[in-house]
Image (cartoon, rainbow, N blue to C red; front, side, top):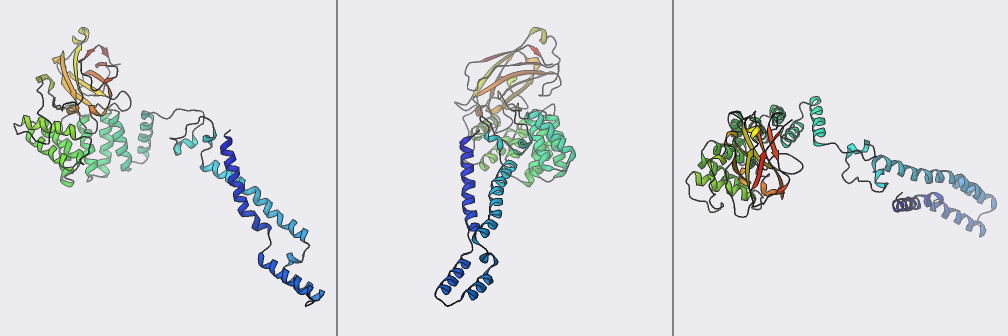
Amino acid sequence: MNVGFWAIAVAMVLAALAFVLPPLLRRPRQLDERLAALEQARAAGVLDEAEYTTKREALSPAASAPQSGAQSASRWPVLVLALLLPLAAWLLYDHVGEPRALQPGADVANAGPADAAAPADGAAAPTLEEATSGLAERMRETPDDLGGWMLLGRAYKSMQRFADAREALANAHRIAPDDADVAVEYAEALTLASNSRRIEGEAAALLDRALAQQPTHERGLWLKGIQAYQAGDFAAAAETWERLRGSLPANADVHASLAERIADARARAQLPADAASASPPTSLAPAQADSAGTPGARTEGAPRLLVEVDIAPDLKAKLEPNDVLYVFARAPAGPRMPVAIQRLAASALPLTVTLDDSTSMLPQMTLSSLPEVVVGARVSHSGQAVPQPGDFEVLSAPVRSNRREPLRLLIDRVVE
């Protein structure tokens, strides 16, 4: 029992009673003054006994009653109130308060409304998968909830369930076809769910409409620059990302990554280096360039992982011509969205890949944003980044994101 809490609670109840009860135990002050005046008049001989009795009775029946009887009659409401006030306080706390906070060691700092019905026996909080499944179930009952579909789509993206994210955000776009935020989210989901990971077709059209409505949309400009880069229009990519940079606050975290992208695009377009961008990027082997990720631009001092990837001989014999190799870095815990990724032809194995901030798809999720990462390599038979049964894979233990020595990975496991 939390003795301190109960001591404070009792003191507060007594203080409340001290304000409420004394006025109820006293007769009205005006009545007392009139009775005192009658007493003085009788004592001075102004009123005889009969007149005194008549006027006293006229003032109040309670005043004419014997004092002990009046006190006895007035005690009942006082006693009832003295009992009901503490009881009402306890019932109110039990209903809207947090009784589990009185239990030693109870962790209710993050308790929400749903916890009020949860057993106080240390039951585990729902996992991301369980919470997402619950939200998906709710959306079947409320199919016109725009915010719910947006939240569900983002949850699926964080879990790398890109096909599910595409379907959820398609519903959001159905509800709000003219909303720029929805259009950009949906375009990104369409791209991530595609085999090529290229921003084209419907995704490109959605981006164009969103930017026509909102020319400074940050995520829209970022993706539009990636679209131009993927198409080989490096001058347009640099110009788009420069527009994005001009719309960002001066202290935005993504400036370094964005400067790398701009410097790389300008160099590839044979444009003069931009003074606001990083120094020209280092060149990489052709195998390191990929349509879905920008190769090798690097700012001095920024994290840069050199990953040497090979595959076990028995698995190499099973490679198919269209197999795709993903080399990626992600957070050791939490969402599995890569903070850096390269998409390559599996037939190029063994090879060396560079992962840095320039190989991120999202400006707010970069290698430099994490002190440690898990690095992985996966051969995908379907071309999808999400692991599928039969894919070949390897995952490292957590490593420092600013690791200088090469990291060697051997793909030797079949995904179940």
